[in-house]
Image (cartoon, rainbow, N blue to C red; front, side, top):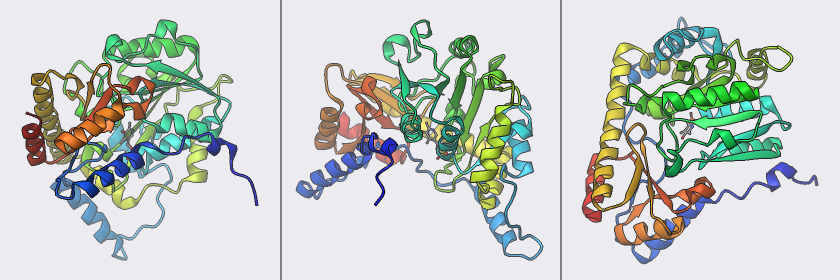
Length: 389
Ligand SMILES: *Cc1c(COP(=O)(O)O)cnc(C)c1O
């Protein structure tokens, strides 16, 4: 028999969500009557809005007709959707040819990691969405630099002390901290990447939750970003497409390797080699999202979750908790100084029957924090507020 891929051996066994489940089950064994409410997993809960579902239905019906049937589409995505993403999301500051449609941001992160290979060094925010690190480890990346993001630095890394790396992963609005980087911060980040000849991999999966008009929804709102940044994004949290699966990646033509060749050309090669395109049904759904009606519907969806966040935020503040996020992101990041995340998790489980996510699961800097998601039924949020008060 062959031996295991050594890159996989060094991954810590996926611990966070299985352990949350184990503790949940254990608690339910002794408290079978308890009605647990989960503010744990980052998944949407509201149904997909009407005009978008109509887009999905229409696409499915078409596939059942001789005239409307289509097989494989272009690996890079349907021209119509690429055009709509470029115009509706980026106001034509990027070209449709620079937009690559995917089956989700997470899958594209994995393919980007393959694009850059094992020899690159990377920087990641701490705490962070686990795929940036774990996907890199699977590729065999050896050098990982952590950028602590704490309340004390407004969740933005101190770039004056940051080592040079080839890639910089940056997620804003952030999962798990709920922090959204300001224009000034992003200008610093782009300037840093330029000075160090690094590439920023900017995850904007939560951009639709940004309410503050001063906060950029895309890295390309920063001058010069097209020379240093790739943007990955997704319809998942934007339109409840977590199960439907649809995302995109922007690789600007200006983004070049040291030898002057275009990163975009290599990405096109990876895409055509390893990916056969996102589902055509999903893509027609994506087109429906980007219509005027769809955009209104998803804005309402974001408002609903952000009202949940607001309710939780107000109650937490009233109770004297140290709470961050929830204003431009569907996550609340709550610090309980001097306590351990798993103890806090257990406390909320046993005393309030609420499932949360221990901050330590997102990195060392998450210790002492809990993440609460704002996804969920309003009714459940009210129940939680009653239990806490
Ligand atoms: C949920 C999430 C995504 C979206 O992933 P999909 O594969 O598109 O569902 C991307 N980045 C972050 C940080 C997320 O939390």
